[in-house]
Structure formats: C-alpha cells, structure tokens
Length: 513
Image 1: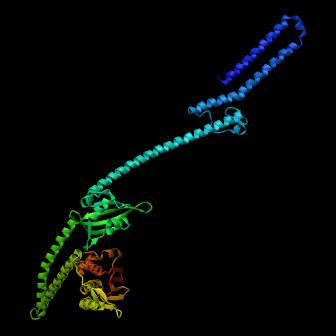
Image 2: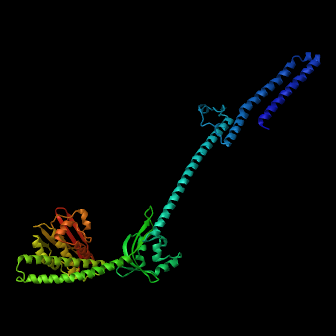
C-alpha cells in the first residue's frame, strides 16, 4: 500500500471518530434534560475543540501530502520515464525561477530537502541524457570508422594480391629480407629458381647459405658480408653488381644484382629488397658480338693495311704518278684508308674494354715525354687546320704510373678532337699540374663550346653532340668513350668543363709513381 493511500485512510478515520463523538455527545444532551441545562455552556467547547483539531490535522495532512508526497511521487514517475528512455519531463536546463530557488517545472522550492532532491535528480537525468547522446554519437563514429577500416583493409589486401601476382610474373628475381635475422620474408618464382627455398630453422638457414659462392666480375670470391643482401641490410644501396652464383648442385647463374634498404617512417632500417637479373643470355649475345666484331675487324683490317701500304708505295715514287690530279686522288684514298683503319681499331678497343680484355702494362713514365710524342704526331694536323699547339709544363715533374701507349692514345684523342673543332688562328693548350698523389693533365681549346645539356653525353659510345660538324670533320663517336675507359683503368678520372663561345677543357688525372 502506498504512503498516499495510508494518509487518506488516516484522514477518513479521524473524520469518522469526530462524527461518532459528536453523535454521542448530542445523544447525551438530548436524552438528559438536566445535563443539557447544566452543561449547556460546555458542550460547545467539547464539540468545537475536536472539530478544530480534526480540521487542523486534515490541513496538516493535506499540506504534508502536497509538500512531501506529491514531489516524491513526481520523482518516482519521472524516474520511470527516464528508465524507459523518455527525457521529456526533465527539461534541458534550470530556468530563472530555479535560480531563485523555485523549480519552474514542478513548483518545488529547491531550498528544502525535497526540492534539493528533485533538483539533483533532474541534473542527474540531464547528465545521463547528455552522456547517452555522446555515447550514441561515439558509437556512430566507431561504426563509420570500422567501415572505413574494413574498406581500407580490403583495398590493402587487393593491392597486396596484385603485388604478389606482379612479383610472381616478373622475370627478375626479387627477394625481401628481414632486418632482424636476414631471413627471406618474400621471394618470387624467379628467385626460387636461382636460390631455392631457405630452411626456417636459423641454424639450418646459415648452413644453407654457406654452400653458395659468389664470384665477382674480377674472378674473386665475394665474402658473405660483401653480398648485395648484407650490404643492403646495412643501409647501402647497390646497383648493377655482376656476379656468378655457384649453386651447391654445381649450377652457375650469371646475375646482375641490385639492392636497397627498406626504412620505416622514422628512417630506421626494417629490411632490404634485392633484385637479381639473369644475364646468361646477355653474356652469350655479348660473346657472339665480340666474336663477330673480331672476325669482321680482322678481315677488314688486313686488306685495308695492304691497300694503305700499296698507296703509300705508289705515292713515294713521284715518277710513278707524275700527274697532280692523280696524286690528289691517291692522297684522298690513303686518308680514307687510314680513317677506316682507325675506326676498326677503335671498335676493337671498345670491344676489348667491354669484355675486360684490355690489358695495361703500367710503368713509371715521364709525362712531358708522352706529351712531346703527341705534339709531334699532331703537329702537321694542327698546322693544316691553322691551329697552334702550346704546352704548359712545370719543371721537375714527378713520374706517373701509366701504360705509355694507352695514355698517348687517350691524349691524342683529346688533342685531335680539340684541333678538329678549334677555329682557325686559335690555340690548343696542353697543361700538366702535379698534385699530392696524382698528376692532372688538361687539354683546352678556344672553340664554340658545348651546351650544358650535352656534356653528359660526351663519354657515351657513338655520341656526337654536333653530328653535322662531326660528319664534316670526321669521327665515330668512340674516341672519348675509349679515353674515359683508359683513364679509369689507370685509376684516374676525367671531367669536362665548357662555356659557350669561350671553349672547352678536358681534364684527367693519373696516379703518381
């Protein structure tokens, strides 16, 4: 039974008692006339006092109900609404009346205990409502984020599958290595064909790779710490290292290896990627090309040498060809014959350099003597072109370690090119300058110069930056490529500097003896 029902019951009982008491008294007064006269003054007091007490009690009970029980009932009703998720009876925030101590929603004075309870409950309900809204928004965001993550994961899986398919169909062998222990995390089919599949056990894996041998282009065994994979895991980028991989089963794979480290966002090495290209077929093509060039060059050079000797013999006897016009034709034939021989020699030299068969015999050499040989050999050519050859040679120069014939060949290529493209009346200068551990040799002309975008092409085979001028003046585009290869085989380096309208300067170095 509720408190409200009990209050109403008590009120009814009091009224019933009051009515019963009035009835008894009235009966007593009406039944006894003597008493009616005696107590005529007191009966009104006897009736008025209980009635007044009953009225006051009733008023107090009604006031207590309104002040105490009705707010409690309202709180209970609102609690049931909140439990069902209905916050409409709570209100959004206290109003001005609430700031004055009166709850505008229920007319409850917040300054008493019931009002404070009502206000606290309303604040709690509003906080619950706010948190419920925040939670609902957070759940919605979480659902959206989950959908985006799922979409990203599907896209990543699709990209990963495409990458694996691409790697599997790639003709180059690809391997991805782990930084922690160097194990192979991923390899394609071409890599499996060359290296097989390594064991998972670390000890067996070390034994597996110990059976492989890597032979460099120079024929020396490459130690494991110098393998492309090891160098890439240590942060080094390797490009185009030619190796012979000797497999434990006796097979040999000729490969061109490259590698690079893999880094995370912080720049730390987390692995390495290594690529291997099988170059066995390329080597076979190169071998066939070298054989063809060698055969053709030999078959061409032999008759050309005979033709040159015959023409020189005829021209040496003035009585054999007294006519000037005929002698001029023979001179043209001799010059073109010598040009063809030079071209064949250049092609043979390039072939030897690329095949690694260009043998040098370095010895201590006096560089001014080699410069003098070049000047003497090209003096007539320079005079014909109306170009002056000049030298700048300091006294008491140290010796250089060089193959005299090959350095003379390289220097003649540079000086003859300078003479060829120098304007009439200009000077081609050869300079020598000793440094701490090397000798610097320079060849400078006063020609038109070379455009900056063409400088990088000068040392490539069959490259002519001004093809029209080269055709008029002759040339194959092999001289500078040969010169660069000869200088580098001596342990030196060659650079070119040019300024349009002022000339070009080639500089190369040779180690001191």
